[in-house]
Length: 330
Length: 264
Image (cartoon, helix red, strand yellow):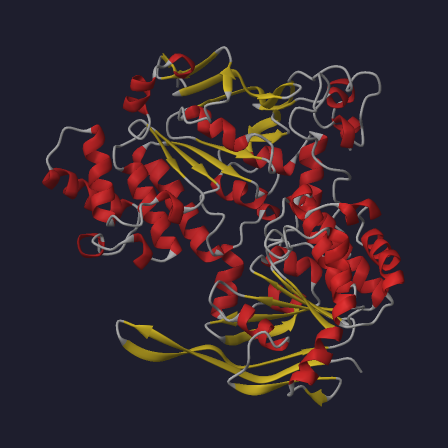
């Protein structure tokens, strides 16, 4: 199956006092209809900036370059503003982290969804209203006919996020981007929303990009995983393969830092020493080089690693792995 | 012994909904004992009463019924609470709002000493520097302002400030939830180290059961103002008895459930 989305060598830079600051560095990935991609990384890894680029909402100062972002045969890197209007919200929709900030507090749920639909589709209010009821139902919003007259402030955080999901679904997009969409929710609500997103993906054949810093959540979403560090993609592959057989020293360090329900003090967490480099301070070498326990002297400092296969559809960008395989990164 | 006890705490708030006032029981008959050197986890979702209970235990909030005692003595008068807060310190969730933005870190750390008048001014600087080193920060951080520090560094500063009075008990309210995974692991390691070195007791409030499993020896599960289950962390997590505990555990995203080679 041909991918609906193919991101090729995309970089995002901001002008800085001492030259450009690169926040997304030469990132590539593809996504097929009905599939999910989890982008995992810590703050400053560039994961949110990629999402903004896919919606054409990167800050004005950002310079987005790359070979191509292919979306159903069109190149998103070369769209004009008015061409974005036909795609943003209609073909590619986004669910943000904070549903309270994403919804207008002065407009009822009903009118927000109706307005969104009528901005993209030439339909009557009644038709848009019927569609609003339908998508609220899909998003698991209870009694939509009655409760969609509520204002966002009258709803709980979980229900607000369901409204945000309904809004994202309202124009039947082919791709939904969820940027830390469950981070502010209680764990049981988070589990419900994750289940809902998985169901919607399967039922409607949506492609889903799920951005998170939580590797546990990545395993619940499934599909493919792209691990980002300091603007660079360092490991990619099926979620299960990457998390059970991590090969990049950063992925391995992250997993050793993350407590699980099987953690105990008998088996202490091992934090990654040091801090993430400041944006723009990563030179031509490996982004993780300054913290890496298995750095290859004379190589990692000067040269970025290319992709090496670590299994079927599982790749890693690491010099040590390229030289010595799994033994080298243990 | 320096034991902190909350005994049969009740807290009711009066809420006004649509013109009708009604009583909301945020904490309903909850007891919690923190033994010396112990790390007790308090878990539950938003609104379960865990933060309200912890705020009562340090006197930021007053209980409707029930009693807090420390070292076997009930804490009642203003001076009792003032004395308690020398031994029991609270670390707040958000390291961004817990520090005054215009106050240098060194001054923020010295302030508790000045308030409690326990260290001659000339020695305060040295004590601040020692404490910064203890939480893994460079003493030069004392000259900086909060906005010059990262989230993880600020949370270390918050911990350092809570430790300035050499307390026996720390109440930590969701102090690692806003941190990145690798920074969170560093702070958890620091908490364990401090507990061991200083013989601290900790009340660790969190909604992340993975962190609680790692850090705590005992855990209380709260739901709608009540403790529904409590016990040793292994017992509660490996063999949960209450339906709510089971639901909460099942909702935790956890990659340790994955097995190599399985399909997604």
